Image (cartoon, rainbow, N blue to C red; front, side, top):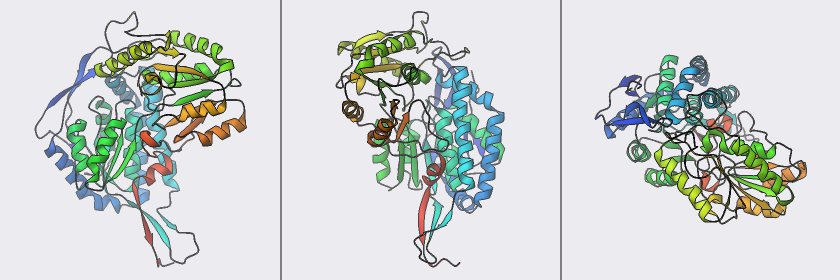
Length: 478
């Protein structure tokens, strides 16, 4: 059992005003692995007040000094990477090798990309229309509330905290109560790096409590939230009364369009991508659309890949998937698998229940449905587990129509050897991101979607700009 930590407010660890304990459950064992306190109004008020008091000084700090502090944070993050990997593996069930390579690596990748972006970021820039003295200034939004999820803890914390620091904002972070240990550790890194008191504050809590308090607080100028579409809608409504800026990165139901001329590894790559992190990624390619002439071979490869996917405890080394995060998520996934069967999808691999060799823990069998139709629940609802739905298509136009027939619009995928076709689809697919032929986003590329996936643009220059207000100045002295 990990020792309970207090909240981090105004540069120090402080006890909650009215402690309300909450167990953190190890999803591999279903046993408590830590206890945290959930904050109440007094804790939120103290954190916001500290951030508000620190704002003038931090906003006035030269950008080069803010950048130097982020570079120090990066050094500490790298030096203590193993601690972070262990924390994330324990709290949300990422297998330890995945935690070391991808979970920790996502955070270091984002910090490094933000450092690069900040090095040439123009805080004051000419308007550029030929008008003498016309300038654009990028100013910090102010005090920001940051609400992060459990599925990629450091990915999302670094995508919010680091650009907010660089932009000159002060902040209150509420990490997921399901996976708070990594964020508490991250607070140590910021403290040791010398972040001034009040600039960064952390209060644990749930969405109904601290999340709502931040979303409605009059001294919070912006909410940056990553999580479910349902919660994103609630936050938008709560924030409307105080006219906050709301930045939302929400769910997804990505389509992976595989044409007959795709490379030989395209299907297996798509299955593995869907199952990565036990399927708990908003940008997972959970709908596989395959050109009919390649369909039978594709579903055989998909079945073989799923059956070769091992499942095991997070503490074990190796290339396996771990449990899903908690009991409610496990039960939701089980219900959706049963729905897929009831609606007539062909079960190729997996199915209900735990893998045969595991009788405890929130483990889901890697599951694949074939012969799906666009109206099926498994083709429309975000499952957030290792479940893939496959269906055939006949024409490019049909594939595009099916791919876009969703309220979500985060990431879509195209696999084809035809460059002209890829380019057409990249423009026509309704999503914030399109990845083709297994090529990932470039360093510093923005992450975000459209529609029910929210409209955040996190990462690189775009991520810093999310935390800036744009000021127009005329008559600037040359």
